[in-house]
Length: 166
Image 1 (cartoon, helix red, strand yellow):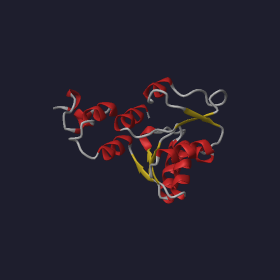
Image 2: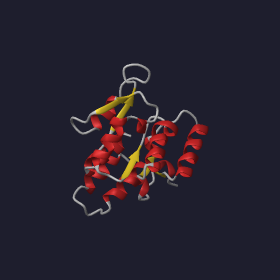
Image 3: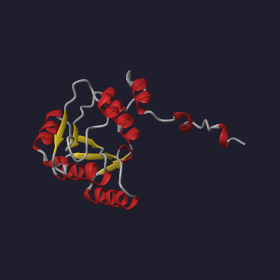
Image 4: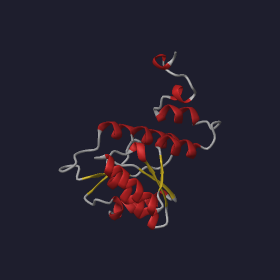
């Protein structure tokens, strides 16, 4: 989630950050994520299970002027899935970065993925979504974007560690 936030900031993609019951049940946003957010980024502390059901969240999303939305959350099957499903129903193109979202069990993860796919949510990974948004590796921000993604690109290009070489 931190790498997703950093990459989105590099691309100038507006972020809407929320938390649930920060002063009680779920606790504050992790410091690493707070640091990755743009300076002055407001975090909406809500009580609703589905972030889409908080008017402040919907207003913040509408204010971005974006039709394509990327969701991630502590819980894939609730925090990411529920608002993504609601956004899809409201006419937005909703994407969920599955590897930027946690889960409580494999069964919950699988159920969440199925439910999202049935509702028309596009399921992907954070790096693919950000590279798709970049669109052109010749863009001036491409170097900063790839640095923000925090991925082991040496594996991608075939440089395998000594442990796997014969």
